[in-house]
Length: 254
Image: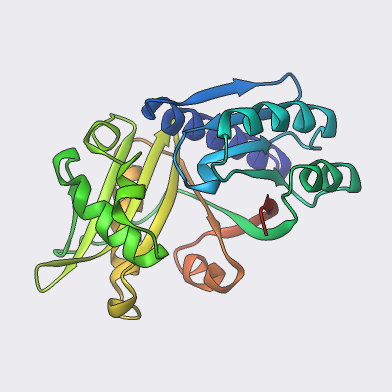
């Protein structure tokens, strides 16, 4: 498989993961267009979870514009975003600006094969059952500066008990300090929402949690792992064998 084919397969796996998460939301809507553009709307006040996603090799500005009109109608004041692979051209930037999405951010898609030696287990990392969703919401909320109620509006017991989703927690002296989410779709493992309570950072908890997620993903039969990273966390994930695949662009309200 060429690098371009790997990235396309990964983008499709991301689309499948977005559909799984959207399907878990009571008010979720998931719509697709012919040239790789997707609408995901969860109805939660989390901008990245209400989005128009340009997932084709070359984002289609007309499709993005059409789905942007639709998600804006669904949102009714909730925050939402436009996300796409690569850099945005002037047409897409105009669509975003027309909806008040004038803030532009960048993330990096990173990919690694799941093969070779498995990471050792860490005694202080475990999977969270759906019944412990408040633990997940509390740590993630603390890391992102958001009320736990916003997080648990989507990541509740029903969502975390879905067969495609595993939530993880790392603990320090019995207290939850780091969480993360793993979504499995068609041989791919998508790592998301890896976050540590600010009071417990730089102590290796995220590394232990990522190692457990990769080990479990490989044991479950996944052949490829991927995630989105900020520029400053690329070295962390590179230490686990992830390689930079391509930049992604996000438009959000400034």
